[in-house]
Length: 49
Image (cartoon, rainbow, N blue to C red):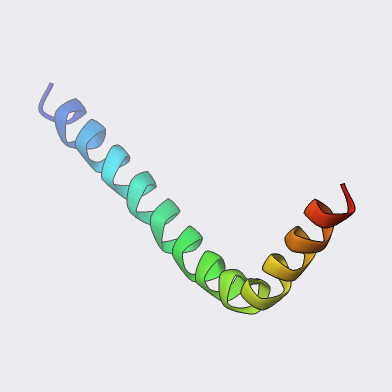
């Protein structure tokens, strides 16, 4: 019982923190480089439609 409680509490925080850490850096880098290109492509696509 004492070993199961700490294991469950350690699993949720470990997975949640890892996901946010791995998704935060890649998303910021992609948004900065795709920011100028994304709006241009979206605008052209909408005008073409």
